[in-house]
Amino acid sequence: MREILIDGADVVILTILVWFIGSFLNTKWSFLERFNIPVAVTGGFLFSLFIAIIYLVFDIKILFDLALRDQMILVFFSTVGLSAKFRTLAAGGKALLILTLVTAVFLILQDLVGVGIATALGVNPGYGLFGGSVSFAGGFGTAIAWGDIAQEAGLKGATEVGIMFATLGLIAGGIVGGPVATFLINKYQLTPSDDDTNHLPETKETPVNTSINAKVRGALGTLMILAVCVQAGELVNNYLSGRGVTLPGFLTAMLSAIIITNIADGFKLTLSKNAVDIAQEISLQLFLCLSLMSMQLWILSNTLGPVLFVTLAQTVMMIFFAIFIVFRFLGRDYQAAVMSSGFVGLGLGATPVGIANMNAVTAKHGPSPKAFILVPLVGAFFLDLMNASIIQGFLYFIGS
Image (cartoon, rainbow, N blue to C red):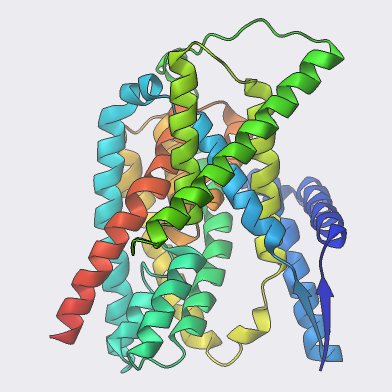
């Protein structure tokens, strides 16, 4: 077998090219735009199909250096943290609590579905957890981390199974989220209201200076702050790991950004909102596109049937949960519909998928500022903590 590694500047060029292909296809295939399928999902998934065909027909494996992807997720969550001012978050306190509690219920249901199907199929129920919140809500990082632990405990191939579910969950979350919001918006004739837009306090910014030097200063200042956030997160991680505490890199980067932005806010210092927004969108799109286009779909071949069945079951459960629980408990308004699309991405794939879903929906139907605060916060802060506790609880009952 021949292997081809794509690295360096080639990764950047190819990722952006695939994104443009996805953008072109979204404009040509009306159903993609109608159901708010993210551009990165369209281009990245089709490219992963392309490299799977090359592998199966020509026995050539195309591999990617994923350092860019790993950096982009740190940058993305840093931009989310820079937008999380405490005085702004206080306005969404009740909704944040509700969304957190709803997420806890969902994680339990997701594991019940996974373990139930595994038991019905006559396999170790531990695999059911990988067909539950370990891989779907937890994503690749959680699946790999728990997979290593499970394999040491004798659950053979747990890591590979987890990666399979996380891969399909990433795709399902990107595909289903937009249609869920579209259904809710159309069914209930929802639109952004003045109250939606003004619910969160405005951030006073200095007048925009349109000179080239001002734009460069704003961009470079934002770039420097993002680099500080990423580096500070790494230093915190190194410190904690030396004391036996392991946290995801994106979480410490986001925490660093939250601390920095609130200190700056206390001193009445502001960053260029436009520069932060652009950095957020670019980092998100590059992360999603590279994650999807680098998937090795052929590894799913041996267990494709059961994996697809479990993924379908989890997707159906997610659709009903988002429509009948998330949407209703969050207020049955436009913001609730947008957050439902984000929750689909969050619960089936990863937080960036949820953000991409909401970006696609709001680009078409209008802004939803609260959604872009609450969904990332639940995904970054509360989901992983609750997920770990719930997984441990299921392991206790499975083992007893």
